Amino acid sequence: MEGSLNMVGYGLAAIGPGIGIGLIFAAYINGVARQPEARNVLQGIAILGFALAEALAIIGIGLAFAL
Amino acid sequence: MCVSDTLLAAAESEFHSPGPADFEFPPIFGEGTFFTKPMLIIVLATVAVALFFYLAARRAAAVPGKTQFMGESVYGFVRNGIALDSMGREGLRFVPYLATLFVFIVALNVSGIIPILQFPATSRIAIPLFLAVISWVIFNTIGIRRQGFVGYFKNMMFPPGIPWPVYILLAPIEFFSTVIIRPLTLTLRLTFNMFAGHLVLLLFILGGEFLVFEKGGLVGIAAGSVSLLGSIVLTFFEGFVQILQAYVFVLLTALYIGGAMSEEH
Image (tube, rainbow over all chains, first blue to last red; front, side, top):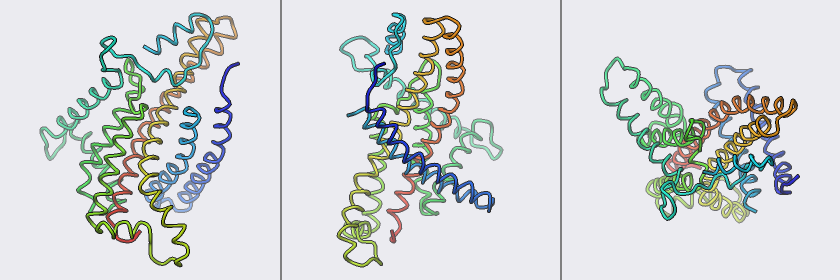
């Protein structure tokens, strides 16, 4: 077995954004289920929130390889 | 080629997992030249995008043909789905830039799952960085032109309606997030999505190949087949992520421009 502890650290660091993205899409699905006609408005907001939360995970994987 | 290097390493019946080294390419025309595979992909993508828009707009008719319909769908998607929603009617003059950006990033990303090319050029950080710098220059220029140099930074750092002690904390954070974090996250998001996606595909395909052809045996062939079948599913997923990331890049650019255009924060 070879590998780097960085990747274990990255795995731990990805928990946070994972939960965050889950919450964002849960709220999005909830919103669409309650009010299907709001789908177009909600979609943009959901993807924006997803992109912002995902940035943390992406910075994490960048640092995992860089450090 | 790095993929064949990995294949050679696999032939020594010990599997080397793919890593950042698989993203380094030697010059195509031998030692001493500078033209590498990612550059070739950029040139091809530029030609393809130019050709696509040229063919779509060449014979514009009231009843669109197939190519014109495709071009108009993409342009309409960026215009109605991104620009109008985030910038209002004022933002319509940015649609040509946004549409070009979208198609160009899609072309560069999708090169990751096109046979033979099979490398997303955007996973080399220089390319998204350059695109992000262009977007950064545009939204800052628009902001300064609209609100004046002082007004732009004042609206950015000191949004009204907040008790003044909060500004001590808020002003540096807002400045840092707008001027430094925004272009940085635009770059890193695109780069490392493509980087990680390509790495996962390499792992599944090379690992499956190694298990089936090098390791062999019942267990090796069974596990390798699962891995190779999984790589097909992952390729489709990767295609979805590639288009989604292009959309996110363009959406964020549009939101930043829209934010710089409006007076209130």
